[in-house]
Image 1: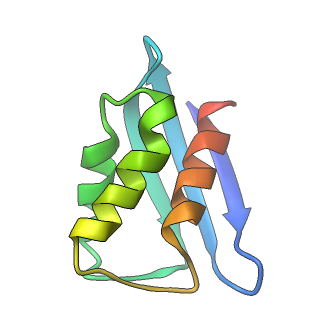
Image 2 (image 1 turned 90 degrees about the vertical axis):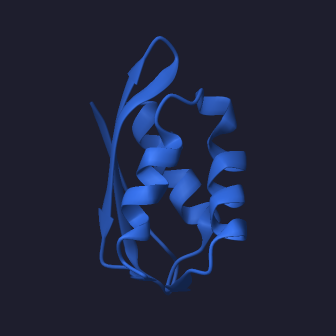
Amino acid sequence: MGTAEFKVPDGKLVEAKVKISKEKISEIRITGDFYMHPEEEIEELEKSLLGIPLEKVNDTVYRFFKKKNITLVGIKPEDFAKVILMAAQK
């Protein structure tokens, strides 16, 4: 399982643990000191990423945040995508 951390410039820290199986995300855990409301949506984001190929991470993350009414403080959707891909490469 690959792990990566990303400190958003002037923002928060986000960490991802990602396991890849057959070129797809088979396990994922996203943590950090960012603010996301409602908080339980982080679990929904993780579920939405299971089983997708790495080349679809950016699109999946952007679509997830676009369709949900989520408040983010100190982090942006692209920061989630970045750390997920960083972890997947380890």
